[in-house]
Length: 387
Image (cartoon, rainbow, N blue to C red):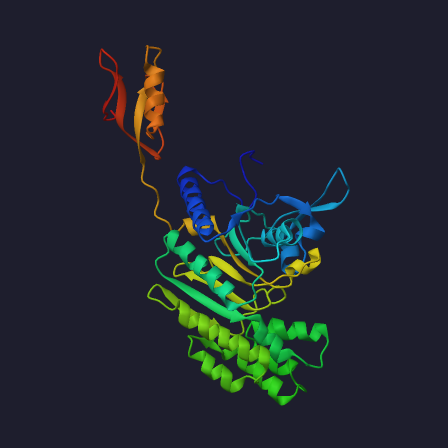
């Protein structure tokens, strides 16, 4: 095996992409801080029972595990930073009011989560704790939309769903956990024949609602149809009302709002509104998020919570490639005043690249349009043309 080969779906980030990714990281973090979010940097490794708290089976299957030689306990390489932020909020900060946290760092997946995905995403996220109202969901979604705009996405689709709908419909069903799980799986696949089979013997109102869900997708007008065919239960009514408010709030020229009431992604994890943001050219969501009020319970402090995450490397594909940065070429010299002249230029914000006299400057990141030269009396900057 060649020593330079990397594992499948793991790759280096080369200069042009790295510059774009880092630029986006700074802009997104600055935008989050401007909204009152505080930066946290959780560790890459944690005890696996803490790392997977409240996150469900999907995250467990995505997590690399290893044994700590110091303690003998099982550790996990984080596959998602959301549980870590919840631990920090619940156990370390322990604040009574609203807490806003943001973060950005690498996570590692056992399997890539999309067609063009890497197994080592650079995850940016925001989490808002301590407020159960829809205002918190609105704030997080607006941050997500703004994040894609900062990344160069000019048109996007906001996909909305709500975990409360299915919970409200399935409430009171006389069926065991395994049977409920089969219904949820069939709903996620929109497998109507399978749903018809699984709901035989279920009371009529409940069965009709379950069979209606796969067809309830489209724009905001689908909610009127949903009210007509779904049972009038408190959880269902509140979910539909919140989805309508969100759909009308976010609709604008560069955002199409789509609603899919059978979208159960993260059902065992989310407790309310679920959303994803898609760019026109991407088969997978660039942003995933939603409400997850129960995650802090494992740490002894359940709190209302909502948030979202995105992979900066995926977002960087939509950002214009950076143009070469203007630079000053300086040929290494031991002449008096040379080092001071270079330092003075850098102090003024100039990019100065020092090279051996005969060396050729390679790479696409810099455009040396000027050079530092000795004019007989001192060091001066003058136009430079390669070759």
